[in-house]
Length: 229
Image (cartoon, rainbow, N blue to C red; front, side, top):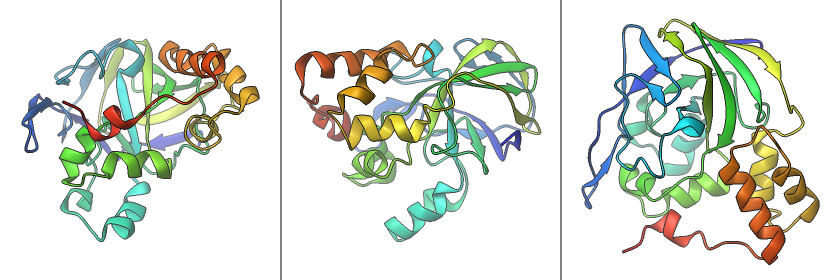
């Protein structure tokens, strides 16, 4: 995975989403020219809920295009799966996935330098996006979540650029391993302790691990996955 070309570079404005008309920037369109990437994301990219989406630890969202074939099989086809962008990704590639990408992996992308900060925790807006009440739960249960980057060095990024791996700071902590600890083997104290101590992981995720260690119980996911009043 030393160099992986972009399939699509995407940004989106805030617009009403689904029957709830929830403000969201999940519908992103491909750009034809270069964009400035700052510590809070690409120029022109917006989030409908800036408290839970965006920010320095979720500046760039990456979703592997190779997952689309699996989703097409699972869902019986869906018009959103005809090309990149179904999951609100800024970056689409083929050649990087959660079982090989690790927290702390540093990539050069155009003139910018970015670092994997955390996996994606799917939320109910995916249900609205796909018109399925269970879509967020399916994303979580399959591990096809995608991930986020923090920006170490701002710069200009073009659609023709590639992700070039420059450094691996915690290669043993793949996104798939962390996903398994959070959603499958949920009270494995050794794994949770390792996650809590993982310096390159976003603080919010480290906090989740610490709270599980302290309480010895798993948090309720229903509001995040199903939406709430």
